[in-house]
Length: 113
Length: 113
Image (cartoon, each protein chain N blue to C red):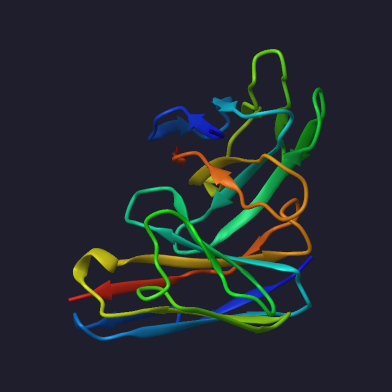
């Protein structure tokens, strides 16, 4: 199994600013994914991040708004850029050797005012 | 496309009651199926999984059987506890390896003493 930590656990940000969320895995994983969970909703995939290549974004999400880095097999970051109140959500990262064994971080609870 | 449909919540049960949360899926081929649980203020934890037809996943008293003929993966527990109060997500992976999870909308369970 893998243990995933995220920083920050929560933040309150002003509109127009940016926040970078860090995701750290305690072992090397091939795949990392970033999800958004809006209040009371299910998880929506933002992008898939593989080490050494650009992230692959889902429909409705763009790199300029959600730039992602994956510098090595244990770490990734997601930046939420030029934030608006609609970006208020929980952001979760997950990782694993394959999709069959995905482990999730505790999430970052973001509030944009 | 691939999708997961869960019963609408919230579900409120008394302690020791029997639990069923319905989940059906639409997918090409034979996906792998999962149940994740999200306790208040936490990330997602894998509860159980099944990777082929007629497999039964089980953990912590919860069970779900992969039914290809009805494209279902219903979650059951014979006697719920207050500590089972959480949001439960049914999910699938369509392909092997490096594809992301597709989640249902989640079902909130509240167990009262």
